[in-house]
Length: 276
Image 1 (tube, rainbow, N blue to C red):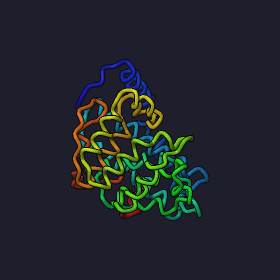
Image 2 (image 1 turned 180 degrees about the vertical axis):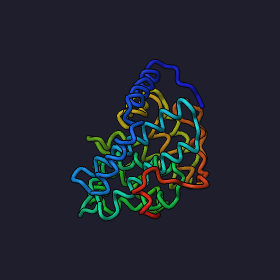
Image 3 (image 1 turned 30 degrees about the vertical axis):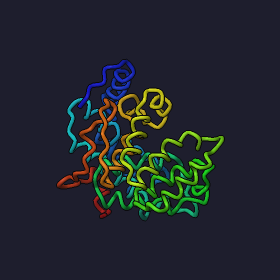
Image 4 (image 1 turned 90 degrees about the horizontal axis):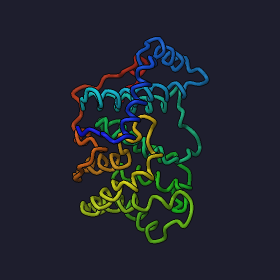
């Protein structure tokens, strides 16, 4: 574990500590309240799911920087991911709709599934793009970038290569899609099994200026402490058997191996009714 000693990282860590110490995370009655509203399917059940995921996010970062334990990381990532899965199942079926908007954060959320090393959950998440609308096939839409992750996660290399070649040959001239050209080069490298090509993109994404432009991708707890986009791609590559080299304080190398836990335990009782 590398220690981040710069001012922004220390300020962010103090932010994490203040939230952790505020008592929210340590109050069983608060977690019970959220779980009960989910069980009863109250009108704000989705917000309750997200709050419990926020608990996993906060606890993971706090624990890692105070008492690092990679198995605890995988446990919390599993629970974050399974909360997403449960929310997608009856009676909640939150994502059942004719056309799901392919927001970019749906790709970034994949890092939780990959960090859990729980293959059934990873494979389940890989199906999410089946709900996306036609904009996810439009190279001029940022939705196109989102779908790239799911095509890559499934290992559909022919489709991924075709999509990458299409957008790289005619990049968007405006809109958010412009900022993802590096990402498409990574996906092309992955589709071709080009380790050197993927490595070049990873090195570029870890340059301070590029990292700075992507801080908006982070949560309020990971910002200035973790580089989620690079972590996502490193895990994705390793999931498919490609190991890339990184020596950077914003990437906990201990998180990278795909070793599953001996046992995955549901953090909240209502989750136990959902097997995967």
